[in-house]
Structure formats: C-alpha cells, structure tokens
Length: 421
Image 1 (cartoon, rainbow, N blue to C red):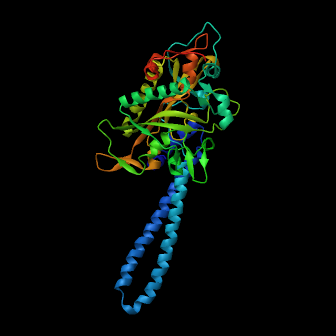
Image 2 (cartoon, rainbow, N blue to C red; image 1 turned 180 degrees about the vertical axis):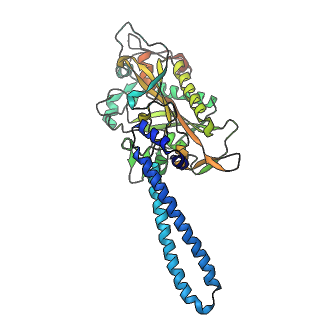
C-alpha cells in the first residue's frame, strides 16, 4: 500500500508511476477524492462525538425535573453520532480499497513500458558453443534418466514431472549450495509454510492482476504460495522490529512452490521451464527504508556470484515498469542463455518493494525519535528448479552426458559427469 501522505503531497508523482506502468492514472484522482471524503467524515463524526460528551455532562448536572427532556435529546444525539460513525467507517473502507488498487510508485530510473521495454544492464560470461547439435534439457533428462515427464503427466497432468536419481540429487545440491551461501551472507534459514491465509497473500500484493495463477483451496480459504516470499513477508506481520546495527533482518526461505501458469497455454510446455510445482530458495530482507536500494544491489550480487560460479552465461536486466507486479518499485531479473532456444530465459528476479508490503502487513521499526515507521522489504531467488535447464544444456557433451559444474561436485560426492543410462 502506498504512503497516504505521498498521495496528498505528491499525487503527480504517483500519476507518473501509474502511467509508466500502464495502470490507471484516474485511480490517483479517485484516491485523493476518497481521502478528502474520509477525512471530512471523520471530522464530522469527531465533532458530533465531542458534542455528545459535552451534552452528557450537561445531562448529569441538570436538575432532576429537567432530565427526562434532556435524555431524549441525548438519545437523538447518540443516533446522529452512530450514523456519523457509520459514514466515517464506510468512507475509510472506500479510501482503503482505492488506495490498495494503486501500485507501488516506481523508483527513479525504472524504464517505462511493458515486458519488452527492459534495459540490459550487463552481460556476463561466454555464450556456450558446440561442435555438435545440442539437445534440449528434456531430451537430456530422458537420456540421463534424471527427468521423467511422461510419468509426471500420468500422475498429475501437464506441467508436472519427476526428478529422478541424479536429477533429484542435482536439484538438492543446487539448493544446498544456495543455502550455504545465504547463511554465509547472514541469512537465517527458514522452511516456510506453503499454505497461507488470504491476509498474507493480499498483504504481499499477489491477489491483483495475476491472482488467476494462484491455487486456492476454498474449503479452507487458504492459498498455495508461488514463492516463500509470501510467508516470509507475513512472518513479522503486525510486529515492531528491532533492526540490527546494519539495518537489516535477513531470511532464506526454502519451500516447494505452486503456480497455475495461467495464460501460458502452448508456451514452454516442453520440459521443466514452466511448471506447476518447483522448489525454490528465496532471500528476503527487512531493512531500514534508507538502505533498501543498497540491499537490492547486494541481493543481485549474491545471485550473480552463484550463476558465475555455475559457469552460466547471463544478462542482468532492469525490468520495465509495466512488468514489475503491484508490489515492486524496481526489479532486476537475471536471465541465463539457453542454447537450444537461442535466447535468454529468466532464472532469478530480485525486487525492492520499499515500504509497500510492510504498510499492508503492518510491519514497523522504531525510529530514533521513538516513533514507528514501515520497514522496507526485498526479495530475490538464490536457487530454483528452473536453473537445471541452463545447467544441463550448457554443460552437455556430444554423447548426451553432462559435466557437473565444479562448484556442485562436493554436494554430489565428487561426481564429475552424469552419463546416459
């Protein structure tokens, strides 16, 4: 949720952000009008309540003979106070609803536009080349006996799979490498719930445009999370945090994730690039708002270190405003080169959500003056199932075997190559 004071003082800034995102600019005017109506209704209610309190003293001090008439007046005044309170409550609800519809104001420098309007910040590593026709990860997985898509489909339907043998071990190795590095960077590990209440899902901004991608269990009114970011953000909801000296509390959430991939029918159906279930290690930071942009750069640095050590060729992009999602004020994606597709595909996203999520979830810190203020929240992926696509295709050999990146070998008993079955 955006800062109401920013709305009052700088509505044009929010309008510019909405325009850059391709969202409704009129929502800003609607919110300003709703805020004015809300404050007017609250003022009217408080004036009537003050009148009621003063009149109550008059009734109490009046002679006994005068009290019946005064009591009747007091009852009429009480009815007016109750009606005014209802109007104020409804005005506040209308304001909150409109305010929650406005996306997080983007940070200066975020490119305007949609999915294709990103800006490439840097390209790292050497694009892999082969003296043979490279196989895609699905064919490699079948040859190696490490990815079983037909049985995944048989058991659960399209976009499901089994990781088998070295495939399962390779994912666990990747996730464990990420966890070890997260811990070394000061992140506390958490294995998070994957079912959350609506308040957690709405508080992190996931019940907006892409709500149709989320699995909902109506009988329990719980949602399956598509990222542990949801549980990690809600972990400290309704709390006042004591930020450490470096201004940040950091968690690394390991969880299974679920997504419908709605709207992607016919796209990336092959393999494990777009699937309904996957594992992910997510970094999450609660930080002092002044340190949010610096923390964002740190998260990207941790991701790049992982990808560089895995030997992957990648690029870092500054995601355009219209592709950010409601909560992010800026997002950097890292996309790895997938040889058989001849293009870069997203492996990580790292978002600076500023104080947007914290306002919704009521997560605050105590300032030097003793008052409380919303913290900033950030998130970024450090390892996930999708990375296997780039790892397998980049490290394949002519006979279908795959060389294990050296950084993963200690987690696989020293095995250097996975051979076809």
